[in-house]
Image 1 (cartoon, one colour):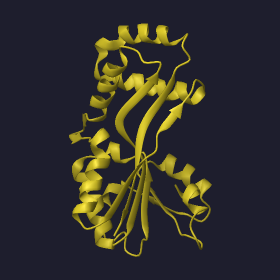
Image 2 (image 1 turned 90 degrees about the horizontal axis):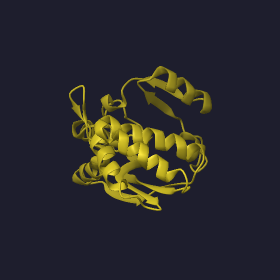
Image 3 (image 1 turned 90 degrees about the vertical axis):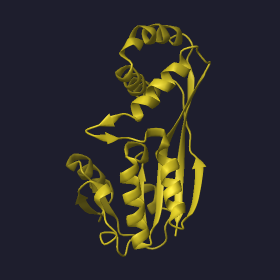
Image 4 (image 1 turned 45 degrees about the horizontal axis):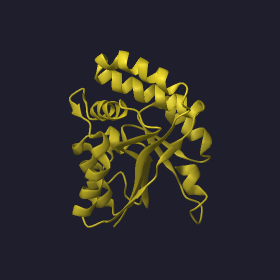
Length: 205
């Protein structure tokens, strides 16, 4: 987000990179010269922590949070009167071309996995962006949502996405494993394309 936004913002923005994973934080910091690192769970940020901040931004994260975590983050942004931009949130829609009879069942299994409970945390998955939009609107923000689909064709990125997607679906429903093997055989001669729907959210106080 810093690399993409940096070229679009005037002046010399000061970036504070927050993540609970020290390895990912080091990789991010190496690509954003001058950035300050903040090793913590970003959902614990308070309004005081965000004082003087113009924008809170993140990518592919709202679907990994609980309702309580999103509400807390929104309230912290509102307390600091800062804008927010969250991109690439999954919305639970995947379309293959050509379609296959098993596609809908796999989509449902993946979405259920996204909404699973982990360590007592009930993740919102595809419902995350809608919840965030409602919470920002509740606190008087002007909220804009826009589609940002992935359009994947056969290749390395497609293969990496597919492994993760099928793996999550089968983790949730292990009984699908044999059907997935048949699905893969059918797909192997088709060179399928896929659209993975995402949405971006911009909230301005």
